[in-house]
Image 1 (cartoon, rainbow, N blue to C red):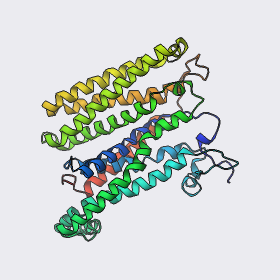
Image 2: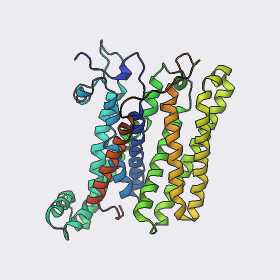
Image 3: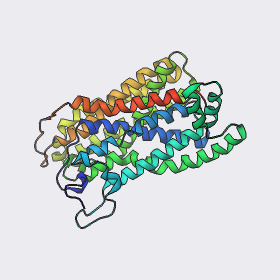
Image 4: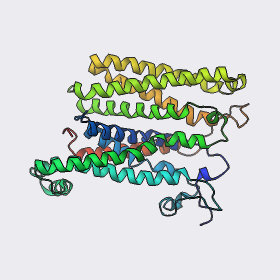
Length: 366
């Protein structure tokens, strides 16, 4: 055991989730995009959407570990999260480290996702190598994995389906990870008294994933939007938006009915919760409108992202500003270049997605 090396959820004192961690909870939507891509591949649906979902998901999910590493007390010792993870209890650190467990789940999920993507694009990579030159030709030949005939590609698709099944458990672990971390912070009276928080957060992350997909797809296709691609995503998004709005309303009602003290304690959170309900209901109705008028889907995405950003900020940041006694609402103090720290992880995910979109043919059906 090296002195000074431990994770926040192994300590008794609280951890303030600063905006950098707020940003990385947005990147976890990459896991949900990969879940949607793997399920669609297994059931033979959303064929035109799978390539974009996969690469967008990998782009976000590949940088998501920046969040858990930011949790470390000693950032320069971050590699120890992989080499000396606290999975089993020890006399010095009793209990289980969620961050360490999720790190291994991240490695497994990312490797499987990359394998899934390469197999899915293998035959298309071979076809691209026939017309490419120079470095691009070499890259495409590498990613083709020697799959140069339709017969070999059919066998590769069976392997891709097996990997798609194996991806689901570790990706699901990441889908529920933020809410799990919140529930372990028992010092926080708001999170402790928020029974619907896990399901709200999980549904909220799916809303982010579908909203990001709709936004990127709109920018990519502009006026050449494909109804067969967008309609299933809009329906999933509509269901997610309505679910988060309804669950948030139920949570407010629960606080009102549970006890006068609880209702008074969460009063500072209620204005933004009402805003979240309104924005996500609006996104729900816009989704229904977009099923008929596809060009309206950009409004669906922007309204949903505004609602989910507000929801996550209210849960993660404002939720910690209520004192341990529940009798006071503290003032938020942010130090250093917190805006840059917030934007940087998301920018890294976007940059990786752009790189992947250059290498792989996103317009091809899976």
